[in-house]
Length: 475
Image 1 (cartoon, helix red, strand yellow):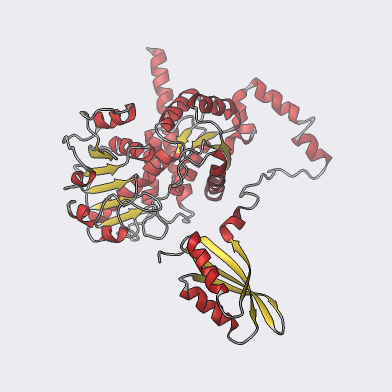
Image 2: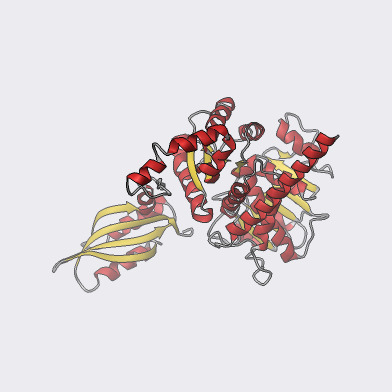
């Protein structure tokens, strides 16, 4: 049985005779079925019977059903009700809107709404840039999706994507105090998406694109960045790239290697893989070999789309061809953002000494983490049940917090590199080891550190542009 998870927690309400061994029989049934018991609560007590809520974690939905059946099979036990705790958490959604100012009396109302609000409206009409200062725009991000590439679920549509976007918005608020809101669009047309987001951008200080399939996501992000004066960030691309770079920075510290001369193999050239390659390239990592389902990407391959063509023209300086497994020979680093079970331990054995393996396909990585540990010095995954989880929540809350605080208009490579450095440096040298290369997602010092670094980088970008504009005007 694979590891149990709170994501598959259930509470089973059962009725059992009130004899001395009643609860111990229930505990034994859960353990025998492979469940992880987390609570046992007596909901009702009578002279002849007990009603007990048995709460436990399962490995998946089928396992939860097996645990329920095991409880029902205990002699004289009746299952009354089964509650899936994950579904209960989502009842009614995970978000709500609360006013930031009290509305206690008529005076408050006259300032927050009519007639006082008219003065603020006229002020913004005279100076539209004041909307950042006088409205929710200064602290609000739209989480935009078309539901075409949701987590490991794929193309499930905008309505089914809504719980994920709600969760994303909750993370923004929890970790960085940013008010984010889901915007799930029932269209796959890039023109429609760009038009809708551009038209509603008045309300928002930033746009977080989420779970939009490649290559459409590249076009949408490029066009919105060109047309809007607020930061546009595709988290599946750049959030992943920032955290991967942070993790790689610390992994290199662990194994004592430098970026110069590093040989990197990336599996997957979709949204995440493309952004990882670009960010590593911006950091001076030049020996990168990218692979997709057809093998190594190289200039002579037929049928390359524009994004793969960029990769072919800017990577693979040694002219490697062939398969992913073949490309790994002598590589220092493997980064997988692709599909499960592509490699085995024998493939990794061909890598260089003190290899680094980031197998990030979720929930099932490109190579079994236990097998990877037999050949690599540092192993990371996208899962929460293994060390070194590469999780975008380390990046996007603090990154947007910093951009909003700076009043910045564009997310640049310098901003993303600053965020990655702040994440890496959140792990103290005394803490750093092969099983701890990124901080915990619940480390409340990370988002403020990322925000401060991003704000400083954004301020430098603004100052550089202002200087360039002045120099251009003088010339």
